[in-house]
Length: 409
Image (cartoon, rainbow, N blue to C red; front, side):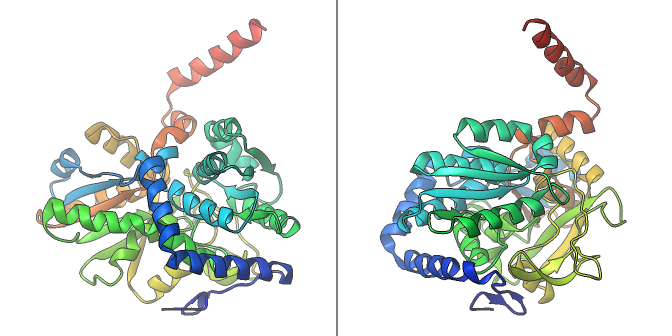
């Protein structure tokens, strides 16, 4: 499937010549570390004693009974340190950067969870840290910005382009070109030039290995369906990889259906996108006829990325992963149902996967099993949710708090 960083026609390494030595160094270091038992032992140790792995697989009994169909299990990645799956590959890459003698980490972030995880491992392992984040996402994810700064990271607003995740990636790449000797670019998903898609997938694949053990212990069989939301694709590849060869397990990726079908109203790459080369790799992108990236939208800051990981594009082309989408309204509805039936507050990204499970489960036999990857928890989405759900009490509280604070200065 993979040949020198390619997944079929997708992937590759399309970068300025000055970055080739850094990527070759990273590739060589990673594949050495992958075979190094001491490195793998250290990685597993920090996952267990710092990140909080393994995360639980929870039977959603109330939701299952409410829907009246297949049994639904939730892989609760929100119980990781920093509240999402992102900490897993951040620990792996931080250990690799240390091994390579780097002293500084940089990263891009949209929803803020990857930025928060990068800032966390920078503090833990002694790196300086700079995070690039679009101005639009800084407003949407202010709690995570605050936390990143408390961890010692410098958060730089990106004010060009759409001022979202795509533009943060471009800013981080520019920084890396200028500071490649001292700096490791801790890329946040299974995207970018080789070896990033492979490396991030490998670090995240622990999720699927945990699920395989857990679901067999719970049900005595493999799941019939696995569902994950898909932005760049790190949480999806994390849970899918262990099951790609299990042909009886259907893999479903859920893109951001947004608020409409027009350009700029969603982030559905496989229905409106086309094949191109952007940000160092070949995949599907939402782009115009000139190859210029189009505007995207999602209520979730982590799913409005215009591209998708090259391996996912390959798996879609081969028919191994089915892709669907959930609208903003469906994600909000799924958020509400899961909170009220299971007492779990999912991230808005993860709510897209829950929305697909809510549609699918009633159509299946009660003996069927669905596993939903809850890639993160919803703390970070507090302000988006309060506004979207029309919580006037919360908004009035914020206004009152601000007014009182100004009067007491």
